[in-house]
Structures are given as structure tokens and as C-alpha cells.
Image 1 (cartoon, rainbow over the protein chains, first blue to last red):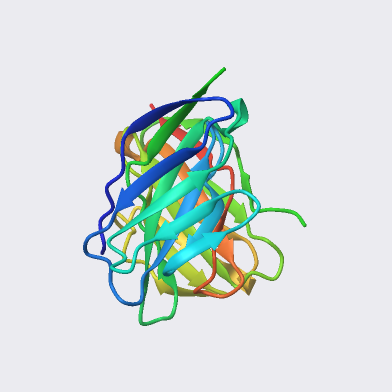
Image 2 (image 1 turned 60 degrees about the horizontal axis):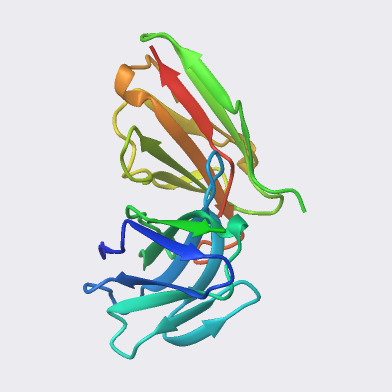
Length: 113
Length: 113
């Protein structure tokens, strides 16, 4: 299983753009990169998923370089409500056809007023 | 659309007792997953159902844990007998197809005394 490494914590002021980078040096050909957000006392919530290059949705952007050994989650103009733990996951597509996702330690983002 | 629901939200039991956790996936999602986070550790995969069949139960810690999904709708996870080290948060997730994004429930917080 591809192991991920991301910063344990980050602080940011409101209104700033936040970039969280995740390393996954052993990513396999079939692996997708997925980011989840988790608030206290809640389950993880899907943010964005990508395979290569750049993916953007209404919440975030995901940048994946050509070698796919890392990825960067970009949150534009964060607010206090974005304070949460962000997980970078590399999903292994098993022979049964599903993504066996593996959670790492996550990055605790604290947004400061 | 209703999300993944889990019951109970919290459970406190004594060592040696039995506890049954329930998960109701999003309607129409054939794939159901159980995960758990024990004290201070990462969220780890337990098992995966496709409809009523167990596709992958490689993450189940031991035979004190029994997961079922009769009829392919809701699922139960029974711990019998519970041990102190079983304390943690148990998450359930579901997805329409196996390779698609998993949607997580809020979790059940289990405390074994």
C-alpha cells in the first residue's frame, strides 16, 4: 500500500490561500489520490480526487505533477469553518475492483481570525 | 439525499460485554465499508461488503468482530466480547460502485471500560 506523508499541522489566517502537500513516493499505476476533510466528531468528508495534472471543483483544487509522487491540495481564501483535519489518501484499486483507501495521520489546519 | 447514518452515536460498555453497531448506507449504494480509529491511531480499514457479500475482510482484527449485511442494505458490526483495546471510533462508508468515492458516516464512539 502506498504510504503518504503530510505535515502534521498548519496555521493560516482567514482569507489566505492554503496549500497542503502530500508525498506518496510509492504510488502505483492504478492509484487515485483523494483528499478528505474531517471535523471533530464527524466522519471524513470527500473533498476532491484526481489521477494526474490538475483537478478543480467548487471547494478546492488538486495539483498532481507528472511523476505523481506528490500532490497539493489548494484551498482558496480559507475561512474559520475550514479548520479541520485534511487527509491525503492513495487508493489502491484491488483485484476486486474497489479502492481500499488507507488513511494517514492527516494535517490539522487551524484558521486564525 | 440522506447520507450514511450510524447508530448509536456513542456506546459505553464494560469489558466482556457485547456491542452491536449499525450502519445504514446511502440508498442504492451496493458497497459498504467499515473502518475504525482506535486511541491515537490512524483510521484503518476493517472490511468491505458488496451487497450482502464480504468482498474483503482483511482488516478485521480478530474473531471477536463479526460483520453482517443481510439483504444487502444496512450492516451491523458486533464485538463479542469487547476488550479495552476495542475503544475508539467506528466509521462506516458507502459508495455506489466499488471504484467510486466513499461517503462516510459520523461514526460510533465506543468506550470499553
